[in-house]
Amino acid sequence: MTTRDTVSRRNFFRKILGSALVAGIAGKQSPLEAIAQIRPSAASLPSRVLGKTGHRVSLLSLGGQATLEEEGRDDDAVAIINRAIDLGVNYLDTAPRYGPSEIYLGSVLKTRRKEVFLASKTHDRTYDGSMRLLEKSLKRLQTDHLDLWQLHNVRTQDDIDFIFAREGAIHALEKAREQGAVRYLGITGHRDPIVLRNGIERYPFDTILMALNAAEKHEASFIDQLLPAAVERKMGIIAMKVVARGKIFHERGLSTMEQAVRYVLTLPVSTALIGISTLKELEENVRIARDFRPYTTEDMANLEALTGSYFADATWYKQLW
Amino acid sequence: MNPANPSEPSLRTPIPAGYYAYALISIGSAFLTVTDLHRSVYSVLSSASLPESVASAVAGILNLVWHEFAFLVGSGLKSVHIFVILPFLSAVLSCVSGILLLLQKRIGLKLVLLNLLIGSGVALASLTVHVARGADDTWRTISTSTFLFTTLLWFLYFRYETRKFSSGKHI
Image (cartoon, rainbow over all chains, first blue to last red; front, side):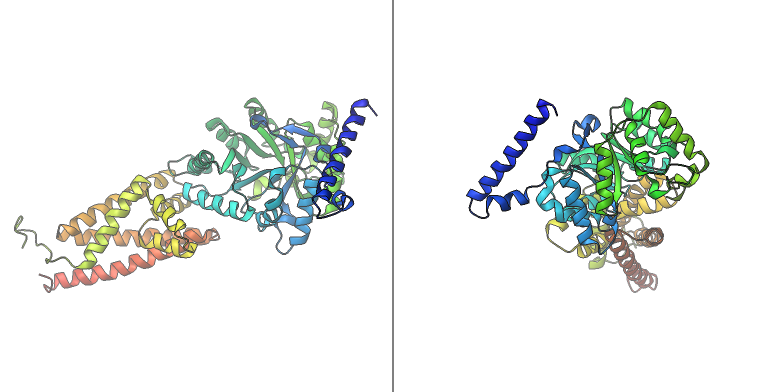
């Protein structure tokens, strides 16, 4: 253990005890009760800079899918969100299209908003429709602003043309930023890297959310056709489809979560966005992110080669939506 | 007979209240649509604490939904030109028909019928596209339906007026 570790740990306990005593002196609870309510330090999960936004985001982010998009899972969803923040996850992603995800997040964020970088999206391609979605998102998330507002699932050149037309959604994004309802603007997609590249060539978005995994190397590759352009523009890069809803795993291919997550985190991304089904899964992913060490170039090539026989299945998201 | 142009018959004076109402909505909505000030009306409706369903219905009745139609029809036909141009075309037609109606030109009445016919067709097409995509935007569903319903009522009203005019009861 280094001197630095010792000092920071000592400071950490001082802070906890100090807060506990203040709470105790305030008279509402005993110092021990206050200690029990203090959440674990959020600094324990490694972080990276989210491109030109300058924000530091945890290597692992919480996606608004899986349990968070299922109706009637209030308790599980709230437990996952709270636990994720407790463990140091500070980037939360959602969208109006993800069922009750925004509502679940809102029920936690009404008291924990300052602890996270909050991202949502608009799937509408018009100004008016996007503004309506933003208003609803803010209401459901119980906040007065988003940190990041993104164009959701940009798939085709038509999408780009509509978004950038006179009454297109891009003007809603700009207006919302001007009004302070959102801080940064982003674009997302998992179907066609060329379309997204056209998007970032056309507008200086702050971030991009794209599909990245080991199977991506084989055809219409986001890794080869989009990632370098995003890096060049110093964008915040958020990876999705890290496990492609489980399709990245195969008996002759990738077999562990650690392989899937480490592969993506070795790429020049700011954070990996993963939907969570259970607390156990969340804790396992946090452990992987916490222990992260980059793969060598050779390791990366080996993992890519392993997905060669089933990459079409693993990249199902390019065909379906 | 129209004293200024004896070959063109004029409508009866005084002008029926319905004509004034229609002309006001047509000319007003054309102006608001072209200048994007329709959003100020949306804001007023929102700040009036009306339920979304009522606010969107009012937008439909006031003819302030042409940008929605332009998107639905334009994206349905994969034409960004329709998305850009349709609100302007509708504004021009609404404005001209409204003015000619107020000027008591017979052609104004025909133009109004044409405008209403086009409006119903476009609204129906928009609604079809919207429903086919899952109708996940309540504002669009209600405003488009209300517009369609109102336009059909206006059409019946002006059709009745045209018949009266043709049978000579109006002159």
